[in-house]
Image (tube, rainbow over all chains, first blue to last red; front, side):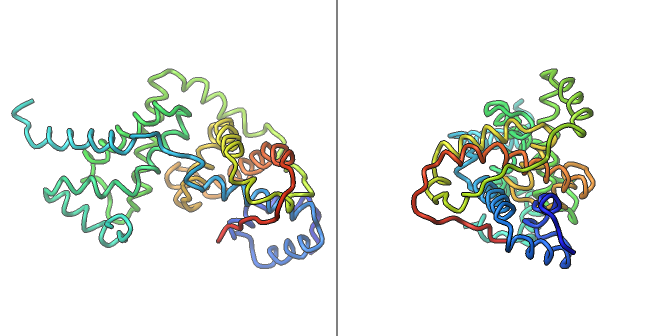
Length: 85
Length: 211
């Protein structure tokens, strides 16, 4: 089937996730071969997802882990000595 | 290191040991998932301090209720569910839930889900993706997504959970996860493309997602 651009945009997300049927995937790839616009949309979306998953983009606050384990330690200790509460 | 070598098998063994009394091992059990718990809380609360607090409470709750963890479930998904619950409760306590529920019901039909065009993406250099401003623009754009899209996007694309795990954690149909993800991704692409266009062309090079 020949896909137009609008159809391809609807599939880009699933295409990136590799969750489109083989037949549709082929149609999309055939379209991408000659369509600069859709190729650019695919590439830009993909790159945004790479940047999203990059651990430097969304960081945990400084000291988060230390505080978390300190609090957990208190919880474990408290549980061990119920009489002292 | 423990965190690097933990498979589902050894994770189950660790959980059994904790439940049998080696409570200190919970520190090691949780370590690989700290970031995930924090980001889950952040996806609901959109505030660092509140997300940090909710993440701590979620971890303590997970510790207290470890005995109720089902062996056939995935530990990470269970944790994310606890983090979501805690963050949502916190939101409710802060009386912001009213606003959120209005948004949930009205937003579905809203919006223009057409991507932004750019013909010069291939000219965008690797350094552009490394720039701090771009990361900040992306952080801002994700924070500004409608609440339910941000949660789906955060679990799937930020924390890299599968569609199925995301659906389970959010108690949604996988089909709905895909639809919301599609819209969230288009919204982000649209917001970030104008920003990328201002990048002066330099050397070529770009990454591809390995999947």
